Image (cartoon, rainbow, N blue to C red; front, side, top):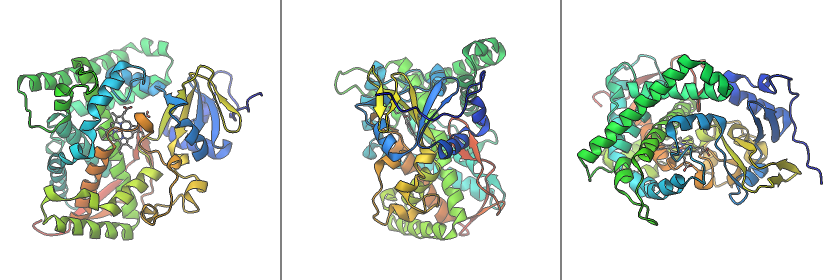
Length: 460
Ligand code: HEM
């Protein structure tokens, strides 16, 4: 049987479908195209990409016996500095399996619970800086980026970026941000043009060398001064062996994993916290419910921040899940068929081997069939009122073996941070009329979202 043609907007001769996508808001464009063309459509960008957004089709794409993770053009560029680290490795690469087996226990709930003290250390620094700047407007995303960067540095490698003690971001952080932006531009330019743009290429290479050098210094120091009691990921990477083969990670691969944790560990979690803050400020009733819960759970711990039981913060967890639904910070992931002959989806759509098929999380997470008439509304209760949620309609952390290894880390950090924020501060939007605008790099965040924080208690 002949396959059903996949809908596609008309291509232009030279640029294919590039004019259909606004480069400063590609996620918005792709979502609008889904509304126009339906749950499966294709575009000719640098290469042809198929976009999918219904729970039924996503159910097929996330069947790991049929599809596997595909390293998209943007991720191919990130490989220039994250190599075969977990995020950017093809599943077939031996280092993916090795690092996955070594690191899975290090990201378990028990291991992450041991990091609570380290997380609280950084959260407390953020709260102090808010107190210090009481009443002055600041960009929420800026503060949360400092929080998540410092947290990943401290929890992963016992390295202090000390972002709350400096007016500028740490140079490590700035290099990272520049590299991510450049990767995105490069993934949209033809390869030859990247080589022709030599000055930007030279700066890019220089930044990569500098990033690697800083990682190597941290590893060399730990090897010289071992710290067996540190519950950090660096110890796991240096000391732990593959339970199956007894193999260790190479120094080169440890460096790639470090870069990976720095990228994956900060942008997404800070986006999650910024969106959550926006939504709870838009709905004061939600803010107050979160505060009641936080006050209760903190009181149950006798006010001892190290004893807070974050698993009791269920309403705050529902707020975070709802923010991840409406604004998934990592807004898409990409797969390709495993079999040489490709795969045919329900409806007769054929996806050839090697073809990138991208799951669009915004459209999926708002599918009215799966989420009902209030799909567009921020409603944490939907996670608590016992209704059934189709797992194929919610994939903020990706899928299967290639799903986010850091999700427990991210949720614990965000739950603790949000609980302390709502319990200790009254928050206001700087501009009460602010409406959500999105800034996009590899991930998405609210743009120009400023808040003011006032300590709720004196002498807190
Ligand atoms: C993978 C989202 C936080 C480390 C992923 C994927 C998604 C995701 C969607 C799958 C990507 C794909 O299929 O191509 C998020 C979100 C986060 C978050 C929304 C926060 C709210 C973190 C943190 C860490 C982390 C805190 C590390 C400490 C990773 C790694 C992978 C990954 C290493 C690759 C796993 C593998 O393929 O083996 N994440 N992430 N993420 N994430 Fe996260």
